Length: 185
Length: 165
Image 1: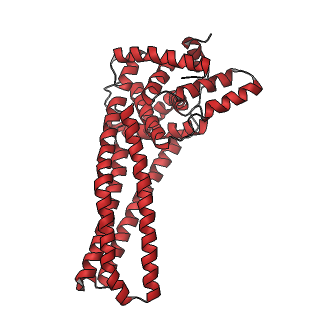
Image 2: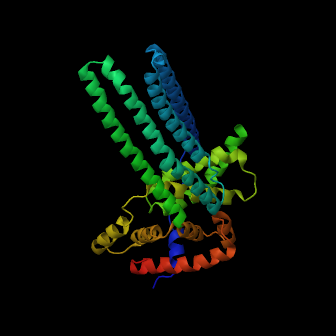
Image 3: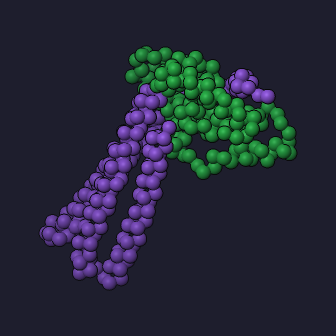
C-alpha cells in the first residue's frame, strides 16, 4: 500500500539536475539574440511601410480618388492588424511573472479578454475593410493590366484572403481555448 | 552590470536544480522540455532582477516565476496526447516489471492529470516547501492551501495505486 510519504521520498530521490556549465552565458546570448530579432522585425516592418508609401506616390495613387481610398483602406487595415499583433506580443512578454500565481492568472485572463474583443470585433472589421479596399481597386486593375495578370491578381488575392482567414481563425481558436482553461482553474 | 551578472550567476547555481525538478513535474519528466522551460524561467529572472524588491524571499520569487512560466507554456503547447504517457507506461510495465523509474514515471503521469493549480500546489509540496510558502507562491490563503493539499494528496496517491484519477 503506497502512501503520500512514499511518493515524497521517491520524489526526493530523483538525481539532482546540475546547472549546465556556461548556462548563464547561454542565457545572456539568448536574450541578446531575442533583442536582435526584435530589432530586425522592427526594421523590416518600417522598411515595408516605407516601400508601400513609396509605391503609393510612385503610381500617383493620390490622383484617382477610387484608387486612393482603396489603397489607403487596404494599407491601413493591414497596418492596424500588425500594430495590434506586435502590441499583444509585447504586453504578454512584459507581464510580471514574479507575481503570485493567482494575480498572474488574473492578468493573463484580462489580457486574453482584451484579445478576445480584438478577435471578435476588430479583426472581422479589419478583414472586411481590407476586402472592401481590394474590391475598390479592381476596376483600376482591370483598366490598366492585361487580362491574364488581372485574373492572376484576382485569383491569388482570393486564395490569400481565404488562407489568412483560416490562419487567423485557427489562432483565435487557440487563444480562446487558453482563456477558457485560465477561467476553469 | 557586473554586479547583476554575479548576482544572477549565484541565483542560477543555487536555484537551477529546484527549478529543473519543478519543470520536470510539469512536463511528465521529459528532460529536454524541462531544460527549455528552466531556461525560459532564468531569462525572466534576468529580465526582472532589477525590479525585484525583496518583498518576498528570493526563493519564493523564483518559484512564482517557475510556476507561472510553466503554466503559460503548457497552456500554449497543450497537446491532445495528455493520456499517452500513462497508457504507454501500462503497456511497457506488463513486459518489463515494476521498478523505481517506472514508478516515478507513473507519478509524473498522475501529476499531469491534475488541474494546473493543483499541479503547482502538489509539486511545491513534494519539493518540501512549507504550506505558508506554498500559499505565498500560489496567492492563496494558508487555510485554502491546507485543505487543497489534503485533497490532492489523496487523489494523487489513489492515482498512483490504481492508475485512476
